[in-house]
Length: 175
Figure 1 (cartoon, rainbow, N blue to C red):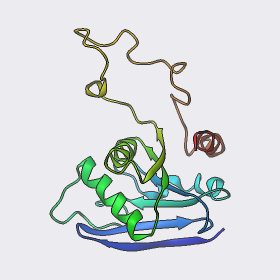
Figure 2 (cartoon, rainbow, N blue to C red):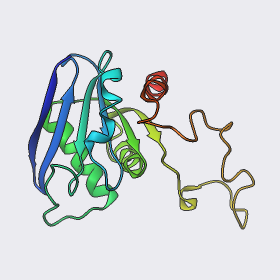
Figure 3 (cartoon, one colour):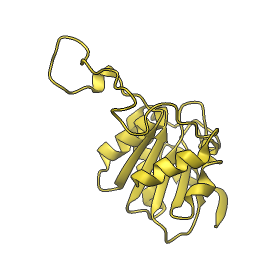
């Protein structure tokens, strides 16, 4: 496994810190941290994923070793656009994307903005808002809201740091 401590990619909004691990010819997997976290969130999990993937971990702008955003802000669409820009600069044409907590919202926005770039999407501890529900109007919450763990595989407490082996198994089963 090749481990690169990190590099700064020059984006128009500021330098973005990226860490790459794993074989360069393996399928790409982008891991996006949540609010008030860094790419190091994924440290325990990364070695378990590099046998089958080239793993990219980014510090969203304003986090970790990345710059504060110049001009643009901390909006989800801005973070998603910058993640896509980083993958473009790194020569990644397709990537599975996983996001933890609010990083899952960024991952979802990335998939919406660039569907040709995102090959798979994994959300860890990312809960939808009620405004995301697009079912028929019922005058209130859907009868099955919030969904129980039995309705969505892998939902519930997903302890990235407590049980990285189980989290890696879940990721790899969806990719």
